[in-house]
Image 1 (cartoon, chains in turn orange, brown):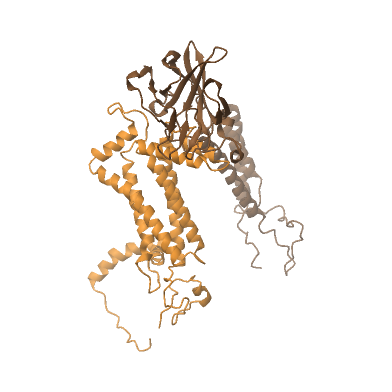
Image 2 (cartoon, one colour):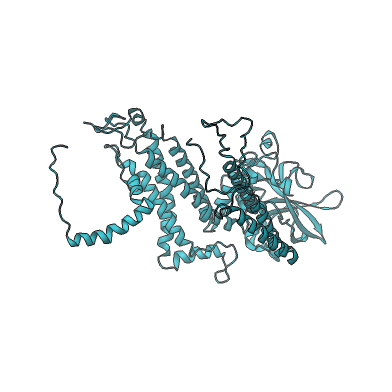
Length: 278
Length: 307
């Protein structure tokens, strides 16, 4: 560092001053009150092992699929009507008719509904691939056990989202699949029949089952899954990314001039601790 | 000495705010109950408020405190004396008290708000359930020894979503002259799919009675399309995954009309027709055992509690 030539301080032009005052001053104003810059750096500008690979983007892919589900779902809710009453114009239940309208009449409705319907499968598939990657990389081990556990809870909540969303088209498939699903829950020992009766809003599927599933699908479960995803991403950011198991980098190797504690680094506790390889 | 609290600017402990709070509560209650109580509350609030203000501004107004600050001992232990012989005031009693009251009140408010809401979410599934009572029409519509598929609306107030199907067979009169019926509920006792009769439906003999549709069918067994459960003419399982015999409807005869009642679960049936011995249990979710050792897994089912 001693060989660096000290830079001569340049006098700022007027233009630079203007840019600074229009861009940096508002940013500084926000940052002073929120520490947003520090937070963004903490979240995004992280050291990762040098031999990470594409499979480690499956988590982000799953998150993207979830965001697509959240957005398309919110928009579908603007046209969908969760009612079992008979629509006088179609002679069919209101819920079924509104799905027909979304698919056939509303401009681009077929696209958004298709994105939501197929995106649900994409979300679950990516979730499993991500889970498999984490398992095969051994990335669930200390200190990332809680990340794994929150991930499993996200999987369970995602499955519940699928189960509750499947009833909403209110067609024969939806009805009977949900009847079977509710009765599957009902076979659980002791509290199973109670759970089934709660889900069906009575001994069997009735007019309030659909609004109940809609409320679960639209309000309760999204709140739960968003909270879980937040915790999951916080833990990932805090604990960092693991090297692949075939990595030749010695885990926990100290970087030159970097005050990494080796024991914590070996445990992967410190971000970017896979070593510099030099 | 770093632990010594700097309370030069804190007002001394005072009871007036409590009186003020009670007076305000009295005022608010009075607004609902009677204006006299409200007036008393308002007067008390003014008096206690003034006293409180007087108390907390004593120092500002330059009055000399009349008493020395009281010192107390925390719990059983004697307070340690500091180097200069002063006994330090108890450090955390007030904050501890506030902490406990905040958490306690918060928990009480949380419970008071959450419990009714949770009850509203859960209880309607188990209370005020409508008992089925459907008139299937004159018993002459049911030929002896033949199953009739009866499709009916169980609860007219909720409409088509409560459409149910039963397989009704007239067994002829019993020994005491009462007409006997076998009425099987169409839901599979595996997981609740719609069981179908294994035989041709006689569409041209279809009869209707209000919302009820009656179709005779030439079938002596039933099968479920979902997972392959098979039942014989008494609803006993002959193959597949079902765990008990088909559910049945209670029935009564009124003015020679067949009236459907509640659904009940059946462990198994021995014999057939009017002489069948039916082991009857309170209705339970499809897939749950009602007899045998496996029934111990379901000691209390909702229908035993809610009827």
